Image (cartoon, rainbow, N blue to C red; front, side, top):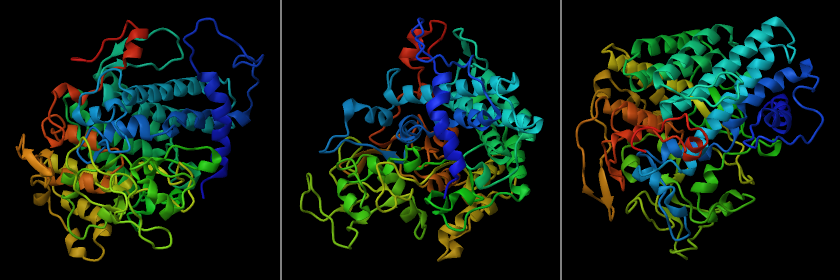
Length: 539
């Protein structure tokens, strides 16, 4: 059961704080109430809402923006059209084909959410630093500012990772900003986290569930170091290892007993594995985990007795070439994907109702290409629990950082610095995935250096017709381990870029379309409204 106090705070913020911190392009401001931020009499009761309010953009419909840009652009999940639609003017296929432009809806949402978050953090920090909102104590004020700085660093990490050069706004000034370099944003993130971490809480569990504590911030900093060579040209593998060691040696964090535990509706808030998460709860107004509504076939309403039917024949589904990489006996395949014949809640077979009407509803792994499928082709989302009777948004949370990630980050960095021990760390992560045959969990350092098992190439009529670049992937088995552990979780784009294959390899209907695609364009509406900004190259 998620904390009632957390949601009471969040709902207060949703109705008040976003309105206070909002920005209107109309210079003639209309005041609908005599109470403004300048006249409102803040009390200590506003202290917690001021902090939690800055998290709002993370919770806001995560599927659009972050998830789609990180997964549909990469090699594990595709969203082809089908007889029930899902073309939407090509907005989904443009992500697979790497043909997006500066007017892409998902890219615009990714930009907007993270800058809204950074601006909310700026305002919240300013209120505390200037004692506009009183703190219960000096120590709590110091910890709150540290938490907000870590959260702001998260938003700027997303901006740095996805857009490169971009405005770095850290005050409440209304002046139009200029681009900062990616190096400058990276340096800011590292400095903010380094300074904030000592003042953050070490409590791991329900008390700070869904918020930044020391271990979440260290995981973020480790991620920044893990990808530092992409961001700045200079690798920081050992710095990443140091952050991972701090988390591992703290004894505060651990893998959950079962792989599915972090994705269940109950129990995740006390997990030692979940380090930072989006805590969804439909009946308390925190909604946005609707991956199942997007991915599932409408007939699955009869299996899970959902209030609303999923969206027609469903959209996001597994890329066959990725599904084929899973090793025999790996329970993460069945724990992440809905596959095979489907039945209703009473065990009766379900049937197709669209282009395969009357045929048994069987989700097959084979996709003919990435442009168009029938109503049953492709494995569907099976990772996040959807309880019986769910509304259109599930109550299962979406972890953004897990302890398994800490172990894999350290393992990858050990490989890249030619230090021993990577195999032991990956084996630790794999053990719960091979409980029925523990011997299959073991992997060595040398095996992790092998090529990926992904069969690259363009697919047409279920067959690879053009293999494209077949150069071995350095540490390719390590790349596979990331994919098996974190399918559906929004890691794939960043991992492919770091392993050097995002713009070189072909999969399904994707062919390389320029190295500049490792960055997204600044949205056209933003460029138009601020002539000081410079668009990313080739857009």
